[in-house]
Image (cartoon, rainbow, N blue to C red; front, side):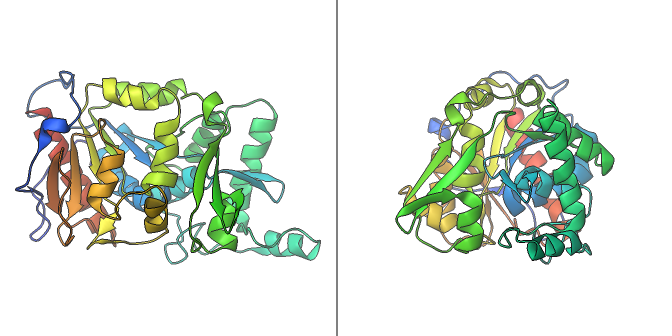
Length: 349
């Protein structure tokens, strides 16, 4: 239910602050604009990309409903099979709509690949596959943008069509493409993840088009109006990094009145899915929650770390501990409520 932000967590999932609290280096926050002290946090802006952030978005939507804005990474975007594919915004949207194929980790459950298979018989590349219903969304987006529409408005139409309550906001309407140096050559992120299986050593990362990108008015409004800003448990380099790199977004978060909380992508000291470790090593950061927190220095006030994480909690920000594995609807909602509870605590201190 919207507004049910902080009921007691079930036994074994309580959020508690780490004993090695060291907030001196954390972000300085202006006075929060919440209506009344003690009132539950409702309006949330969540930065997300990849499965971890999408799962948290699904849990958060269950709790706050249409008061959730998800700012999604578009550095993964690619034009393939004649359509405009926006993997992270669509991944988030399918999770919010309850349509995600959880076993595969992407696309739509119970969907077929008939169109893709027929296209490959005609000679289309077979390395980047899209299921039929996923292809429909991408075809709609291509036509919408080709006719002069904004990427933001195309994503909004897709979300409305699938009946989601939250808003999914692309980080920018200008194209940004994440490129990876591996095996001695540059390639698009999707080529690295699919053709190389996301397993090759990462030698470099660049964001093509980032200097020309601008945050949309919707993104800036979501940040300014939020009562809590959350950085999801996504890959900090290729999912969150591009969002924060868009000129103006980092400053908007720093200047916002809402508290800013990050959720570590490390569960029991390991990432649940994806090549986060390879990217953390590539930029010279430790493969720990503390390493992730270091990338958000000056932005976040607190980080929520998994209760079973054996590594030391981050210093320089307030560190909270709880079970953060999101393997079910209930666990996703529990983590979302815990994040809101931490946000409320920060807003009142």
